Image (cartoon, rainbow over all chains, first blue to last red; front, side, top):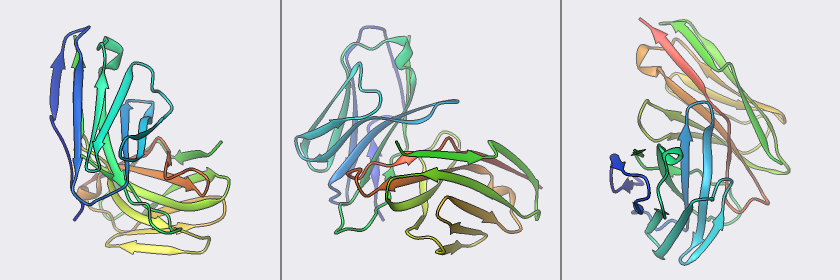
Length: 115
Length: 111
């Protein structure tokens, strides 16, 4: 079974702090994703990585950056946390198969509260 | 731009009362349509992938079907443990692995 783990289930940070959210997958997947999920807004893609050191902005990248130094690890960084970044953060991974669609496997989520 | 609309937003059923959830989509070249289940406070869990119109997939009390414009998730004789939010997502051939998600249908099954 694919396993995607996230470093924390719950996190409380203060405004202005630098926050690191880490995600690790154990299935040698090429693609990794960071989403945030808010009531009434659904899943929104923050950043996407299709290979080590490669990244692409999603729909809402402002205020975030990412790092992918190793294939299995994808980090989301909030450079200076703000209260509007309070949310559920979800990491996911998927394969790049040869011409076939591929599902995403999600981690358990990190509930981040910025006070 | 790819779009996914799910209906209804919320659905309440009695145990054993069968029903269907709808996912309408527009996509430029469908690579695949996915269904996920999400329990409160957890990450989505993959259920099915459908690739082409006419395809069907089944798992326990769930059956997913696909046409050129929509997908249905049929729930037969649901149980309280089927209560969850069900998400639909589409992926286009041109989209480098990214999926577009709907907002989900929250299903509550009362005993």
